[in-house]
Image 1 (cartoon, one colour):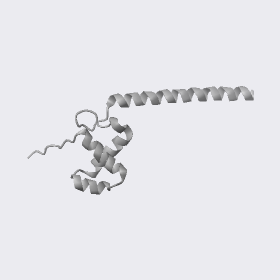
Image 2: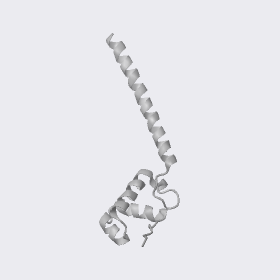
Image 3: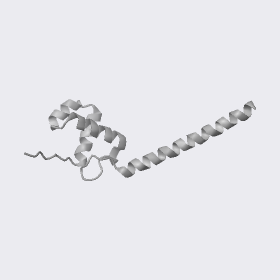
Image 4: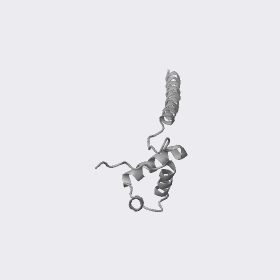
Amino acid sequence: MTQTRKRYDRQFKISAAKVVLSGDMTVRELSEELKIKDSTLRRWAAEYTEMGENAFPGNGSPKINKDYEIVKLKKQVEELERENELLKNFRAFLSQDHA
């Protein structure tokens, strides 16, 4: 006997994540009520926290939107490059001051 995997739509996941994050119910209580593993609810809450209303793209799949992740990482790289350049300039300034 094969077990089919239950799929939940985006709005259901967002609603469940909001309940988890609000603290109105414990994850265990909601898990028992919805008959969903508590680890799944925690994952949905974490994804919703990270991505907000952009969470759960596609057709009910919990996969993170790859394009969003790429843009986020590019911004992080730019920020780190700016910080690195600032530190290089500061180090050069300090070495001139002591010379």
